[in-house]
Image (cartoon, rainbow, N blue to C red; front, top):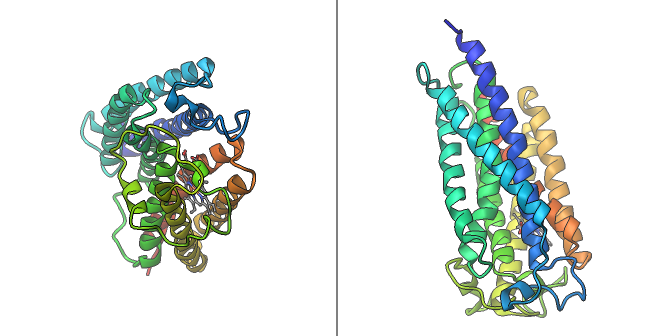
Length: 312
Ligand code: HEM
């Protein structure tokens, strides 16, 4: 009979493969979405969001075929991984993450049916966050299969990291809304969105992803400005909370490597956001900003796991 260690090793390899595939899905779908929205198009900025009004769509058949091939392979592997975690008997803790990963993959497969229509903000919103969720859950399965033992008891409090993970998720949701609502052009400056420093009463309605987007938000659009302002404020809160949480974790030898990686990714993600705006929404920088956000989420979760498992 196969030992627990050998089984965990196989599960870890499968989950590692799924993490790589999830990152590939995220990268290709960010390219398809942002290229389709018109980032980097010509004549800039008039071509942005033309797909919403029946204008020429920046097709990329090769990217679409690649996306389908990678996503189908990942779904198949997701079933294999979930099966491996159940047979001959359930194995925990990786089993629960593998199950959650498979459920998310199936959900995203269904959402994919609706996401071809760019007017459906909710479909793009779920796709953007779901892509990051795939990376998070597949990497969580790798970590859970890596210890070779039962989960470590919770020992250390990690309030700063908890709060930082919360604001990180909020920042990502707000960023996803900017993309899903075609609001990237609403606030092209770094220092301020016009004279506004806080969303107007009308602007808050942009937080609702369940709307049909008819046209791209123009310069100074109240909803678009609200999303940009809240995204940036939330990013600053994330920088402070995760930054402090990461600096604190440097003192724990078992968590040091993850803490260094988190701090590096945090600075990189912030810099990519700033450079995306300064560059006038360069396609390459916006894609890197999207992928780095998912990596940041996965590493923040890894640090939390390490900090909690470290001896008191
Ligand atoms: C912790 C820091 C940050 C995180 C986690 C984050 C995350 C995200 C995410 C997930 C998106 C959606 C990307 C997509 O559509 O695929 C986004 C979009 C965006 N972010 Fe950030 N962001 C951060 C900081 C910043 C900063 C500091 C700025 C600028 C000052 C910024 C500017 C933007 C812009 C302009 C977009 C819209 C690009 C587009 O989708 O068209 N971000 N962000």
